[in-house]
Length: 202
Image 1 (cartoon, rainbow, N blue to C red):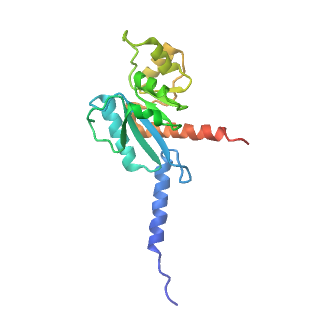
Image 2: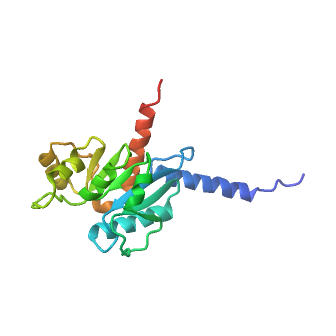
Image 3: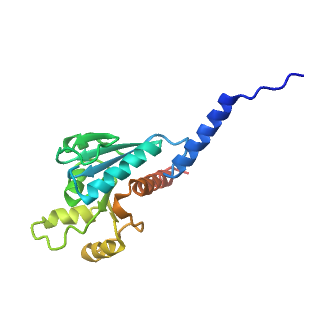
């Protein structure tokens, strides 16, 4: 009786599928989920601690994970300190962003995001910008931290405490150091999936 030939292409396909499942699970996704999109909004992409950490982290996410489409929006078009591996748009294009979550990185970018119809905005507070800054518009500060569409995520536990004390709000329990795009994406996508499940009628 002839020996049964191994189907190597099938084995490779199964292994690729398993690998994809593992990688997507790191973002709280499964293979059956629709392609997710997340927008990151920066003031600029020139050299700064926030931008350097953010772009490095976003590039790592783009290189190593499938199932999520990342877009960057920037208020000022300046040559980036690191070449992004995803699409970059000017802030005017933010008006075309529909229902996918946005992660903003400053008071100003949060105000721009609030001008859209996006139902959930994640204000990643890299630094407590409101301290010793008398030029800051108090209405913008209140909107950027207290608007019901905004959820605040802090870089450090001490920043979270300052923000909660200053604005009387609850900051996200998850602390995200140095604009870690992987942690931010998982947090945002998991919350989005949970909200969709809770809105499905029984």
